[in-house]
Length: 281
Image: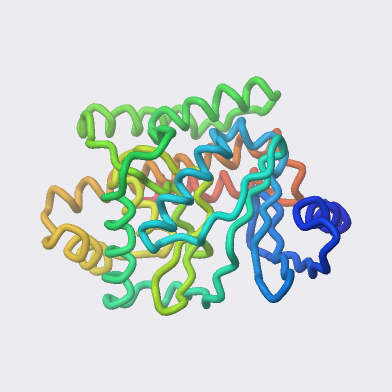
């Protein structure tokens, strides 16, 4: 999306005011910009192509973002521009948290506390069930002419086995996309990009955070101990199984994106990487 489009959007949101538009890197779903206006800084996120097919509802995202801000975890929400679904939040002047730092036990404790605050928040709109999401991504991918990788059937068998073994789980507000790039540290742990948030399984959030930050068993035990007060074998088993679901979701996200996204990114390779990691455990 050309920078002029973001400038035109900024003119629409802040008419007649002097604004500075700076592209932000890192997103592979949306186009993100820092907007400086009258000594204040905001983030404008302009949605990528057909993101509703990925299960994203911008109004749900707004409400989840507001809940995260109230919990001291996310940036303050300024506006949701309809009908385009552009989200405007305050810019967080924080530093990224490298994976090596994220794996330190003191950082793990801080992140666990931040996740716990959001998980304990009041219910949010929307539902996220990783077992259902992968099936929906497959249906949408087929509808858009995407050839489904052979790995899907094997992965789906694993998903159904996990669903049967774990049964129904308590639903709590979850982020569901805890990539390393979605964390900032400004003295507090902040989490951004709440577009996949919904009521879901806390173990998916914990597993998603763990695998995206390359945790081993030692870090997983530290995460569970920080979050629950102890790291039981049962909790470790749940975390391990939901790591598989995290990779399955990422793989099928890539499969669907390969058929709908206009961004210059190799989504098929992304899907292959996550299928391979899922089966390497």
